[in-house]
Amino acid sequence: MKLKRPTLLLDKEKCLHNIQKMKEKADKNGVKFRPHFKTHQSAEVGEWFRDAGVEAITVSSVTMARYFASHGWKDISIAFPVNFAEVDEINELAKTIRLNLLIESMESFIFVEDNIHPKIGIYLKIDAGYQRTGIAVEDHEKILVLILEIMHARHHEFEGLLLHNGNTYHAKSVDEIRQIHTQSMIKIKALKDFLSLHDIVPKISSGDTPSMSILNDFSGIDEIRPGNFVFYDVMQQKLGSCTFGDIAVALACPVVAKNNERNELVIYGGAIHLSKDFITDNDGNRIFGLVVFFDKTGWEEPLENTFVKSLSQEHGIIKTTPELVNKIKIGSFVGILPVHSCLTVHQMREFYSLKNEKITTYLSC
Image (cartoon, rainbow, N blue to C red):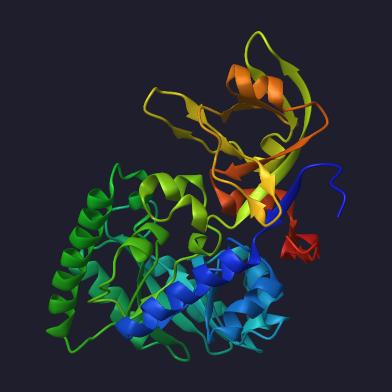
């Protein structure tokens, strides 16, 4: 393939390795593996999961659920609070697959009970510390009341409790990730002990890539739903979830200008390609991506003292060294390891394997 513009490249072998490693970890722990497909968003990559023995998946929207249902997935959880406005689409989808929805309030449950007619599974969203959505894990009585309502629903089933420890993404170390997970599970155990007094033994579904990547013991969990691990990214490497060698995607960008005085390169690759997510290094620099050179088998380790320092809509500015600013020619391509691969895939809408195989996402259909 002749590169002409920003192009997202996928190392399939790294991706398959990431899938197999997480599947083996789930199997070893005896937990159900329901991976989140919001990272790759692709039916073709989904088939690689199916080849690994995955039968149930997680998505983040009704639209995404419909796309994967159309590609043969029959057991899908939408890990996002029910959007009342999509009730017609939900009803149609629930006629054809085993669909699980997420609620976090009595209002949502009443709406689901009154307006969704095919049989579905219902997860109750629990907030174990992330403070984004869900009922606070300490609010035992409120959780009990809602579970009892769901269990007595006319035609729906209570699937269990679903949590997402997204606060691990803000951790400063692997130890802190372990602590966040441990504290979350202590709170979940206290909730389960309380519910057991009422003869309720809920399934626990948990999923965040940092915890699932770092931990080897999933005690207290029945189902895991990590997503980002399939590609990983610079943020995950900084957290300690993966190595640079595990990152399976890189954005190929042409160099269109440079400034030798400032040791800067300008690439055709901006916020509409990478998003504006960033990490901060030890010197306080905002990093919107790390720079790699391509080789015959993919790409090399990130270049030292070289990073994307800023983004506008189409432009990316790379800060580098005097040696590299002289070495890299205008018109050549460099690779950018994304800070957040989920958003980069969403922005790009398609990617290519290193063997020049085009892979589309649900957004390109």
